Length: 224
Image 1 (cartoon, rainbow, N blue to C red):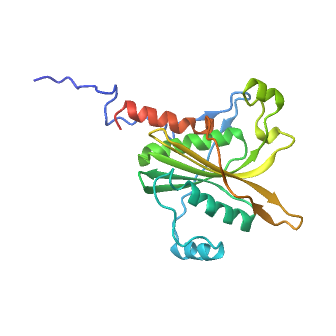
Image 2 (cartoon, helix red, strand yellow):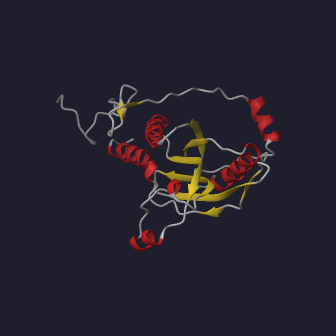
């Protein structure tokens, strides 16, 4: 008999070590606090049915895991964009093929955007999600000649003179798979919005998803 506890991952399974709501975030350049707010919205079947009809959405919701749902969610996102002229940033969390949570994300700058994805990573752990799909507007720019020579991106697309507005749906899974679709958004003279046919994108590094990747790695080290 012994009172020694075996440590298989370095942590006791009863200990929660994820970043909690007690964590504070500060901006390094000026030391100002960066805060986030959240609001829970209850599902409403009546409003959902009205939205399907109003946006002329497919009656069958996309199915499968996060990767499999990318084309279907892009189809829905394009219809919303063309009707409203805008699209919120939305993250969907999956456990296998089951949608376990939907999160609307709103941020005003890069600081609050990074904080929003840190909060998303915390939700990934709480829900034990193994797949994440994100719908978002974005700016798309063409690499400059210098960037092509250096094989890098020196400036984000939002700073490019010839930038174009776009819509993107991308998904990542805990087992390392990635998928992305993009389309251009055109604005007409009378304010009408048109989305181009979607094309397969290159998910690349997806630096904004680093908090999620880090969370999955930490979960793996703790055996969860």
